[in-house]
Image 1: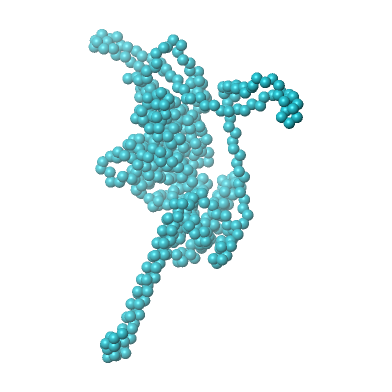
Image 2: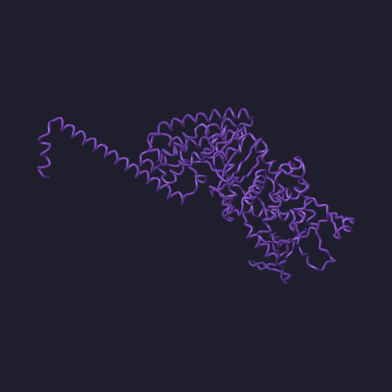
Length: 542
């Protein structure tokens, strides 16, 4: 190094040299600090990249179970060698459920097929002795009969006014319709219900239904089928109000939402993101599912569904829900961040501690529901047991929060707990609530699966119609009612419903099973017209 560089320092006094050294050290310290921050940022980004890249190939957290000794995980941190040698203890496993037997009614038609040959005598293959005939061995096989269709011939009283005909030269024909919009369709209530079941319960898009009908000899376009569904949906608005009334009277509402693509939106529209919003109202006896189409997930939009509701509302961690009174948050979502870490790194003992504690809440819920039938006793015991877990969890949060960067996967998961802590622990106040929001997740899952097949709704009116058909389907399933029977019953009765009491009878737990049996009996009694030779031309009525 050149000696000239030291010339200025040679003539500097001691104080100036100390100041220069101090400045250099501060600069070095600042540089080292920035370097440490950069290295931490790199490590954080690597963790996030590893988490994101691996999660796509690992089962979801809902399918992910941990088999480890809770006391071992909650003890002091294990060394790498100890973690490599960890022993999985014995555990209980639920006994595999036997398959339900497949049955058909006793009056099912039977075809007899005899597999006999011409030989009258048979001999034993081993000893050549003559065999003695015994009772036949009968194997029952189910055979499919291609779907058949019948004609439902409705007769409506019609009148003609002779005075009008004389005065104006045209006939004035008056027909006594029950509901002209549905009475004049070429599709009966059973056929429209079948189309609804295919789409909203079985996930079969209308264009596939059109192809099936064509294969069976019926020329029903997807637009025609859509018009049938929309026509009946226009009648079912009062039934939707009954659903809303029962949702609002429930002590607990579970909520969730998922995107839905709508092609033709009103202009101008600030956001192209639209959603299907689901609510599940739960009480002691029954549950009810209500889908609603919404244009956005703004706080005001979400709050409008519970603005007059005084019960508890359980949701996921969407920020738009934070202002809800008596708000509950789902522990499955709170646990998901930790489970994602363990799925990528099975040695993440810090995340395992959190998972273990949260799992204790689920076990407490399961045991308390089984042991305490009395409502007050259940609430008291669950609160006592869960409160001890809350204290342990809060202590762990306070002890470990400073150990992780706030934006790291672990730091983010811990921050989630702090953000929603009050609403996470509040579920112990509500008898109907559990630590998770699975009932809403399960209610919206059929829509998510169906969306993969039909992809989008053409218009908002179509999305709104889909919302209520899904509501009917999922409510029927949740209450153990046959979906096809329930939709047929509702569509057949809707044209004759006039009062709130009539619409109340269309709720699944009020369904008249005798009426359904009569409809099926009438359909089974259909016979061809022996005198008719011309095919039926179906055009409806005008």
